[in-house]
Figure 1 (tube, rainbow over the protein chains, first blue to last red):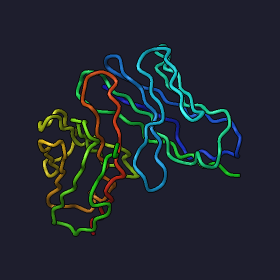
Figure 2 (figure 1 turned 120 degrees about the vertical axis):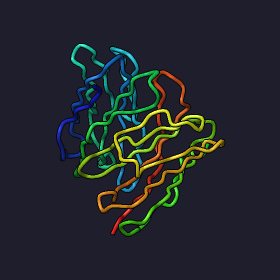
Figure 3 (figure 1 turned 180 degrees about the horizontal axis):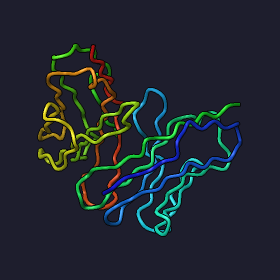
Figure 4 (figure 1 turned 45 degrees about the horizontal axis):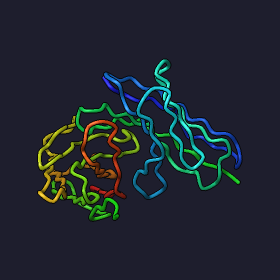
Length: 113
Length: 114
């Protein structure tokens, strides 16, 4: 079946620290991969995506590379800010199978000044 | 372009009642998906509608139903509410095309069942 596994949270970092949130997946077929972010009291916002192996998605200083050999899509940022405090969700979608997304359980990030 | 809107934002109901939630997708989007978000279960897929037809369905009981109108707006209905139905219900819209179709989420409806 299709599933996404994210590292357990919560994660607490000091401002300007390096961030990695691990995400691995299991999929039938060739998925597209996404990172979404949810700020308190809000819905999910697309952060970045990648659609094929070795693609790198990037946005707002965040990056993730689609690694087919390790079935991973780890999220990284070189220097986090307090405003990055949120919950981060890794997700996958199998193209041409309707529009069902499979989400990880989410990783809560708190950045302290 | 206006984003995905959901109404109402907050609802309080009692056990046994029913509830209807509404979602207006981004203009031009034909696919609407619904998700239930709870602290214990995370994000769980309920169903997806495309061109007024249910295209995908998650693993929820028949008390959860939905529909989509010709203007792509969607409603979700939960009958005979249970305490465990308390959750944030998220709606997401997309073009509905094949391939890496990105979903855009609304702010959600927070349902509390007493």
